[in-house]
Image 1 (cartoon, rainbow, N blue to C red):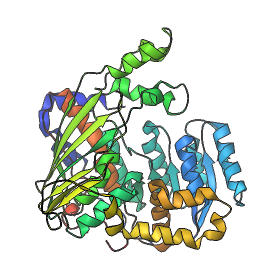
Image 2 (cartoon, rainbow, N blue to C red):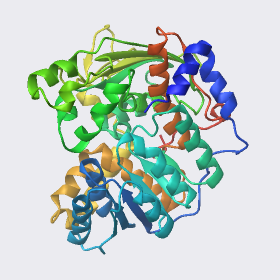
Image 3 (cartoon, rainbow, N blue to C red):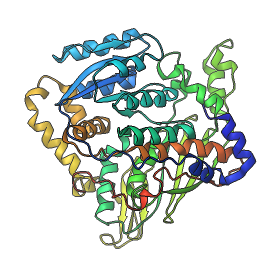
Length: 454
């Protein structure tokens, strides 16, 4: 949960707290790990193999150079299912760790692993990451990586101290329209990028009211916190477009929430009067809008909207001095160099024209795997059309080849910090809040993300 003491301090100290935290948390560690020697095969342990985790497991089992050595879950049935999936593709049965909430520590201490994944409830992401890194393992976590500011710094400092990668897995960065836009940005087709709009707009009321899966814990956050609780699906691609932590960085944020009505109303209409989820009250505003300004003068409008009836959207608008593109749900664009009139052009044809090399490579790789695909349609579907598959593949390949992953611990910290800062701003009448500089100045010289030479 958000740190009560920190919030109280923020209300006392005002909008300068972000900078104060940055100064107070600075450490003597030099930097996040650079590229490390190749490791092949990559030996993996997975913590949290429920709905989300099991999808990652299926991806990893179908990749070259991967050994799933261990799985950990408080639900023994979920761990057994992961073991079955492993044996089904002809690989050795992984060791199971199911002795309660913290059995991941035993896994990290006893197993000979290169990489640990976690797809647990949010509050367990940081404990798993720290246990993995302190035992010499790289770690990859589902989003968000952290839900408290101290946790963000803890991830940064532990990665720097241990020399282990700490990667937050943001699958939207690898989706086809988002990667096409990244390709266009890298080719300067939009000119200098100045503004972006993004978010996570997805009706998840039913999910929160379930008595299984994410419904067991997700609604708790909405009953205790008020801000943008899930920023990274929209923010991750935008951070790549704007070279955040690699030439620019987030400077400050202001945030505002509507009142909370959606979940209370939904619970009243769908749950019996005695149900605990109907009896409690939800405080997270149904719609949160946050505005971020970067050090180099770019702006981002970021929305969170998950508790009202609406179609799914991420918006993903990028505007520059030479053009504008809107990526979701309807891909549209206007390029000054190609379009004489100021109107939107349908974007589907541009998916091919400006297709990112990673997507081209993915299609070629799928063709070369035809013998496997003939017996495994799951592999083909994910190889060609799944950003989640590509995020897992890119991380595994980086470790196998001895190159730096596309994401680093500074991304994990700065993207996750949006949640905490939005809560603080909302609680203080939408006053500006400074972002800590998790890189401690290295953003000025870090090179942009380079994927397949783009």
